[in-house]
Amino acid sequence: MPVPQLPLIPRTINRAGAALKGLGMAPARFEAEALEEAARRTTGLNRPLAPDSREGLERLVASLEEDAALSTLGRFITQTRLNEAVGQRLQLEDWHGRHPALREQPVRKPIFIVGQGRTGTTILHELLQLDPAHRLPLTWECEAPFPPPETATHANDPRVAACQKQLDRSESLIPDFKRIHRMGALLPQECISLTSADFRSVIFPAQWRVTEYTRWLLDEADMASAYRMHRQFLQLLGWRCPAERWVLKSPGHLWCLDALIDEYPDACLVQTHRDPVAIISSLTSLECVLRKMCSDDIKPHQVAQEWSGWLQSAYDRSLAFRQSKRLPDSQVVDLHFDRFLKDPVASVRTIYQHFELDLRPEVEAAMRNYVDRNPRDRDGRHPHRFAETGLELDEIRSTTRDYIEYFDVALENRD
Image (tube, rainbow, N blue to C red; front, side, top):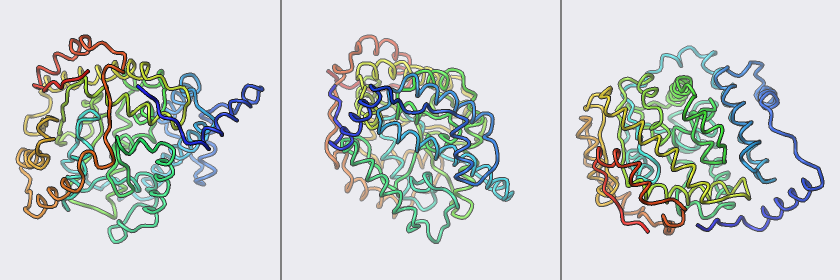
């Protein structure tokens, strides 16, 4: 599987940094204490990071130094993102502390799209955004949530343009990414962004190779604090810009559905399904493009091997959760990728019918128009081949058999 190159200027910066490192001029290591102190100076908030968040941050920075093989440009980008995440955590606590009314903001019967990546969740999220009854976390307000957005200026807040400018810069570094996953300041964002400030989020292994951190996150971490913060984030975003119903999405929920339901017992889940072989092929391609922004050491077979194991645990855990019947059938609906592709709006109608929601004719018409204007290959095709992952097809078929049979997942022809 080919790994795309960065443009010339970033490649030159990385080569210069590598040369300096070869001369013994290595950059300073990331340290949790230094990051926390820098965030206190930037925000003006003299408060400690919550213990759960501090634990996640310490594990993340250790794994970044051990596993990520960051380039010179990658270290700069990573430093910026870590500083922003720590600052965001401190500010969220500060806003909730100074405004007790935030804690009273209801989050009633939220809809969570919990399918794995590459299963149509992004376009589904965008379609549900077209219903005025729905409130989705948008990219710009997840990146710059303070002060919280207001209804009157939600679409033209100055932070929208600032966020889009930053996204355009990122896209200039990895132009192939938009063929796989489009970005936009006014497009909905995933929950992995909301939980990143607690440093319990699969956004980090998506961006960097952080093997030890990911093992801890998926196998050991208590996710209760992440979902408590998730609710706090929704309360903040909806405080001055409310709507009837929140609609969220992230593949990260699949590893911890019990923790999600502990925090949101009235949640409605939409689980999307696709052939695991197609998912790992597409995801490996996406990861190789995304991680290239911060590292020159990208090995597609390594990416595929690690993610195949992590995905397997997501299939197993989501299957166990569904078999446990902890969630009533009335609160969960399954959508299959092959049927969704044939008629996305019909799948949306299934969701509304199952949860007894009102899909108004004008909203359905807007959804059909959106589908027509946004074909799957609008920004170019995304070629990916399972044969290039280095994985064994029979092994993937064997380990995912229980998931495939339970949810009646259609198999795709893959080479």
